[in-house]
Image (cartoon, rainbow, N blue to C red; front, side, top):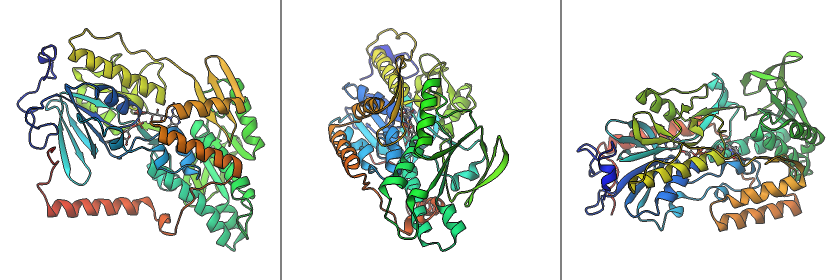
Length: 481
Ligand SMILES: Cc1cc2nc3c(=O)[nH]c(=O)nc-3n(C[C@H](O)[C@H](O)[C@H](O)COP(=O)(O)OP(=O)(O)OC[C@H]3O[C@@H](n4cnc5c(N)ncnc54)[C@H](O)[C@@H]3O)c2cc1C
């Protein structure tokens, strides 16, 4: 039942928003307060987990992927240390014991703030009705107006991206091995990473270890140890969001393991054979068959959609300029959290999304209980960490600035602690231990088929959707049992 405290708010179901056949939780006798959560990342998952404890709330968690992705370990998937499943528990597993939570696979394409509906599609079109909506759709890569670069310089935001990056890296060594042209071989053995923030340095560090240690001696025509790894950034230092001392130490460590750092250098063109850059020495060309993108972040397009619908604004990265209670102006029943919003002094990190998710869940819960609204959201900075190699990290935590093994131990403990369950924790520790002892990496599966460009897969998906719509035009979401 909807408590009376909520009855006079805009959350009240109108005839249009009342449960219908295609609405989850429409089962007779179970008209709980309907919360739709878009995105099962750090923010959305936090909201759903906290609200799931309430019996008077019916939650629909919709995500375009069927898993919660622990993005901070994504680079370990793309460099063969961990498998995808180890950092991506199925959302369905997480909520199996919560009958008031329904998990749906679908990509949200539209939100109607007046009708209180969300439109999504996987293969079938889905319409969801909400009393309260939480949008936590995260962010993607920004190519600074050059979206065409994505094809030749994949970013790293999703598991699909990580697999694509892993395929590019591993196949580069394979294709160098089979090439008889020295220039071609050199280009296959040149890896350029654009962006020297945490993702870029973590990728570069792992790539250095992979080529100098894990793959050493595995080829007959090439020496993987000779791989050239170029890390470039338009900024004047690596890890620009860290403090000066840490930045200097990180720079020295990256150079020590043989990474070529080019600062004050921006990519001006990227194609299948390499990239053009402009730096202190002017414009030059780097022949690199593998270019990886770790430079820019753009909020989910849903942020712009919400802004347009509510008369709000977005910042340069497309993030919704948020109110201190994270609700949408004029729509107290709609919240946006995490990477897709911009709040003064709040960085785009997992901690911020978690804290915002916690705040919003508490606020919604309080409203349902008829309590007065909490104080505005305030962010508690718990510090920053980044790993630069197998067991070397930097930590900037509560005034403490560390670089080296101790920082790596802190990094490892923190990351293990934030994983969703014990099974994943155990598996990951086991993998790290194995890698530490043997220098080996187990996730190195590729084939010639995996070299197919992503566009081919997307085109195939569109064709499949069109075929399905033709066959079954009235299909929608099945009602709950
Ligand atoms: C490679 C990498 C490394 C990182 N390392 C760190 C780190 O070490 N420490 C740290 O604090 N932060 C790190 N971050 C940042 C951190 O992961 C993000 O700040 C955090 O994930 C943001 O949480 P969120 O809930 O806003 O978005 P996300 O966790 O990205 O979740 C968004 C969810 O929404 C879903 N989604 C998106 N659009 C739609 C749609 N239209 N329909 C349905 N579902 C949709 C996505 O599938 C995803 O599950 C890293 C990020 C990356 C990419």
